[in-house]
Image (spheres, rainbow, N blue to C red):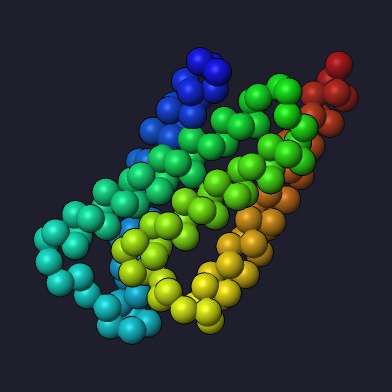
Length: 137
C-alpha cells in the first residue's frame, strides 16, 4: 500500500503540471465556441485549482497498473471509472458541462471513445516495445 501511495503521488504530481495547460486549452475552445469568458479572479483560481486536482487524480490513478495482484482488465476498469468520476465531478463543479441529460451523454460518449483510443495506443506501443526487447534477447 505504501508503494501504491508513493506511485500515485509521484504520477499525480507529474500529471498536475499539465492542469493549467489543459485549462487554458479548454478556455480557448469554450471562448471560440460560445464566447465564454471567466467573470472573476475567484472563478479563474477555482478552475485552476480544480484542473490541478483533476490532473493529479487522473495521473495518480495510473499507479493502479503497478499493483501486481490485479489483472490488466480489473486495473483498466478501476482506472477508467476513477478518471470518469474525477472528470465528471470537476466538470460539473465548475459548470464546464451542464447538469442535463444531453450534455452528460455527450460527455460520457466522448470520454469512452477517448479513453479507448488512448488505451489502445498505449497498449500497442507497450506491446511493440516488448516484442523489440524479446527479439534482442
